[in-house]
Length: 561
Ligand code: NA7
Image (cartoon, rainbow, N blue to C red):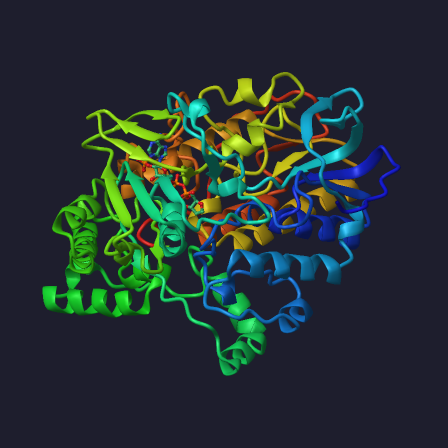
């Protein structure tokens, strides 16, 4: 447990979470604005989602040269990634390096869980309550809780009766798990399940993968960097920074301007083959219209399905794995290392839950509707998260009139994904309605943190005690987020965590902003230029004059992944 000597109760700013967002926000508020700032963090170390996601094979899908902060040339040049995609261990090492270099840990209170946040309008102050009963106060409250931190364990009948061990991939034990001689059942085949299966199959006695929805996956083609490339990355700070800030998804590669149906079938297949050989999320960038044209998407989907059939030797398994019911990349597109090949191992079996759903968990394993029973010693839940809104709602936030739960009863409503009417002086880094999970997160995070810091600076220097998003602005923004997604195939998938469909009872609202980071940044900047249009400064009412947006319509053919 890390020692933090917090004796004060009042701060200028409180930040919740010490991942990429919280660390940079602390640095900006404390070191650039000179505000007294405290970060409250549930885990015993820095890392955010990477503090908890330690399952075998856990690795970022973003390429290392772009998965970093770009606010400091010095930090960039003194750090060296070692592989094409950073493993969870290396990301924690990187975030510890940043935190230590900037002396951030002294202002982070670890092992501390927030239980409630409440705004007192008369004093214009936020109160943050900790699980142990302590309370802290601050003028500014910034949520840096990330989008994927509320683990989802489905309520399967009989779960409590299971005699073996259960693990959720997003809450993996720090000390690791030994699978030798063990029969493992894995539920879930999203990005996480696809990473974990191939690693666990190498060491366990038997792995049974329970697949509900078949998924596309592109080979990641991870490699260890040689020194020449590592040096190149270190010495090309400006170019890489400019690149990630100019691409619609914040990744360090360009999306082609080609439309899939504008080239011949032969050319198209050659281009898919070349992209397949390169691997990773870059595959999505081979044509610009894969998420806007059903025909183009179908071509990509058929290409990937044929690859799956080629890789998997058992025709029954190949059929189950390639029987995919949604357009490619309309759900989060995974990348993998030997995922489909794993099903060629003798110690791996596959259960098709579409044909034979889980009936219940029993003391010795999982029983299916057909009566088939799979004997298991361990169950791994790779079942994802209550994404985007889950981490915010778990903070039990109460604004000037309503709780966030009440205000978001019909789904998230906010302005630019970072400010919520009725919740003055609160900012949500990569909140719902911002590009967040459709982008390379550190790039989105830096943009949000910089925007929030500038906004707080504006308020402080202008003597404003209170800033609040207007209801009309939030309504317009939420509508813009919806219509942007509707123009793409993203909104065609009815069962996706982008929509909240993985959580029973959660309102179905397409949550991330699909207009791309470049467009989003322009909109955010134009609102500042217009004197924080859509925000009320220093007034108590949430009823402002009706307003309309005049921002540029996003180029929906050039989306983030
Ligand atoms: P995801 O993408 O939400 O995947 C969860 C998987 O778990 C998915 O295959 C689900 O099937 C499956 N699931 C969920 N509940 C059940 C039940 N009750 N029964 C069977 N199968 C179930 O989460 P990940 O952790 O893989 O990825 C989340 C993000 O983390 C990822 O995008 C990266 O950004 C990092 P379904 O598809 O719902 O039928």
